[in-house]
Length: 332
Image: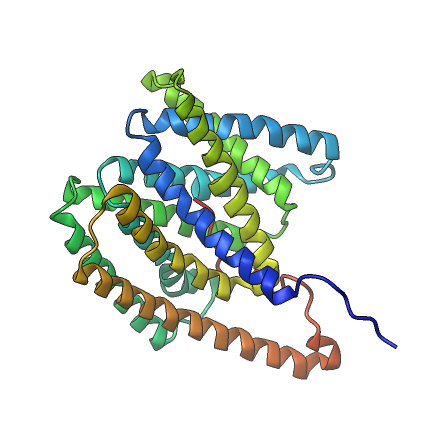
């Protein structure tokens, strides 16, 4: 006789977590826009990460989570963090500070699965299919439409649109490095290394530019606390939890939902413009991402079917996170 677990249904928990992930990731762009109106981006970023670094280092020390991890593994995680967290956040904040709409910045970052699957794939020994090239082309056209629709209303110099592209490039570089790494520490250790590396670099930059001292305004500390808790701990923690629960293909689809969510919030809260051309660009980008994700899903299904044939019934029960070798992204 088997017992049934009584409680909240698993699909409901996953759906709530997915919605929370999209909102938490989107909040990073909005907090950057609101928090840098009166304060330099380096000041906000330093105090977003520095207190969090202290807390995380203390947790790792108390729990002994880093015990037995090779220095080489920690060094590789430091490099991944420098790309996927430091570089990503710095360029996102610079883009928004330059006047680029939050939704546009989020959209350019959201198409990174297209770039990873199509351009980085060959470097990882993955064959690129024609559908993936078509998806990349659709996504590129969509980005151009969105940028053109926003360029007239935004205060940003056209060259500034390279900043969110640089943020995306940092994510791609972090993805490539992660795919090439063998050892994977726990989420706590990974996040701690990334946050510490980011904090050290930001403190150096803030000292060099004279922007280290925080303002006395309580609103600043509320903003930094939200930035540390929601887009850093919340979005990043949900990212890894959902990665185990739904897999990277579905998670990349959720990442794309961040762009229209951010654009809608930016229009409501910040007065950013959304036009018919902007919406058309979002649709094209969505189509491009859908094509690539569908191709990736079919490839993963084919691989699992092949494993089932080769190994028998045991292959029907893959270990948790078996698809984590597919391209992954980082939180803002």
